[in-house]
Image 1 (tube, rainbow, N blue to C red):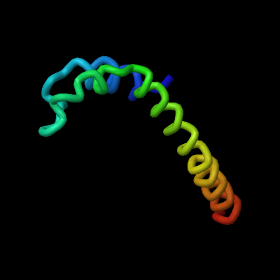
Image 2 (cartoon, helix red, strand yellow):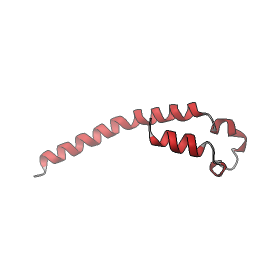
Image 3 (cartoon, rainbow, N blue to C red):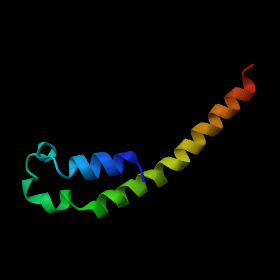
Length: 67
């Protein structure tokens, strides 16, 4: 699990009242839904993986071309 999901989302964001956006004060149950943060983290990992693979491939190709 990512640092972002565990430390920032679950420990800090869920328990600090300063992060509640104006107009969403009635959504405190949603803020404390740990399952949402875990699912969103997994989706973020799946979205980021192909991007990271593509960037790694581009860097490898550039390293082959450049002396």
